[in-house]
Image 1 (cartoon, rainbow, N blue to C red):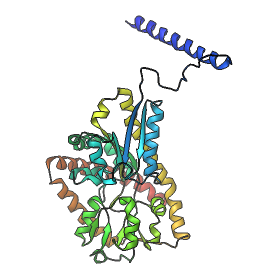
Image 2 (tube, protein in one colour):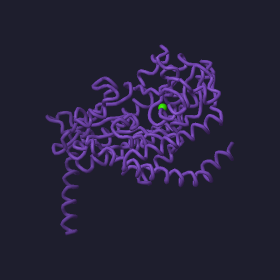
Image 3 (cartoon, rainbow, N blue to C red):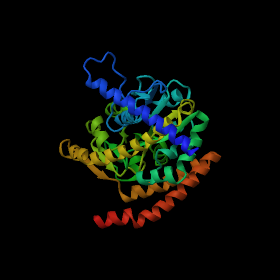
Image 4 (cartoon, protein in one colour):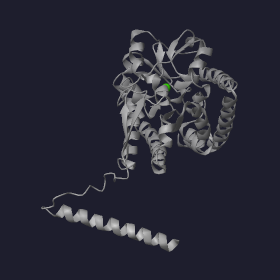
Length: 375
Ligand code: CA
């Protein structure tokens, strides 16, 4: 068997060798009648597959829209052009908050967004974006890839005919933009703020009015006074949106989004129809895009923050310990209640909390101890 396999491989190698030689010969010859196909093009047996990716982001929006573009480009490159993904910004094919249904129903093969936008479909989905006072980016990836999180996420999306992947992370976000000082929890009462997911529910318990808006609608809503405050992401993105033109106070830290995972989801039907190597490319291109987005935010946020403060006069403030302590108590309540909604949410909550406790114990003596020592 081994020998037969060897001979077969040897024959294939010889064949490839002769066609490469033929290509080189043809390239050298000026009188060639026909030019053999380039080595980079798919062979006849490898037909090109074309997919659509719908996103919740404005087209080419820094970090997020470009993160979706990066993922699509990686899939194209890694597959040698066999799987081509065309990216659509929000509203180009479907509105931002309809991409989940669009991929679930087969209008597009892929989506790029954030799982907490789909809490109306499944409460449990929120655990896979970020949890107030939950995991950092590093811990989130550890839970997903090595702590059982990804299997649970697949279980949540399975009834919708979708396969999820983590495809980006913003790191710790900012607390948000406000037009008044937030000196105590009572300053949050009656505050109409754009803040999605579990963080929004926490604001509600603190007396505020949470609103969920896609990114493209935030600036005009804040400027017109339709909302009093907003969180978005961090300096790199917030500067690009011009949020400093609509609010003065910029608060930190982003207690509500400590390590926000962006997602890609794929139609299970389209995914299952791919050969195994292309399936692996989709999964592993997402892993590359996931890591790269975090690196990009880490590299760019501080420069953008300097620009906001030095060139635009933004007033940078830290939430007081008293406010953060109160928000943490409310967050723990909200997250625990989410666990009581259904059996799957309970299992996810238990996995998440147990992982957070372990990650915290280790990071207390590693990341935290080192950061403190570095000063
Ligand atoms: Ca955010």
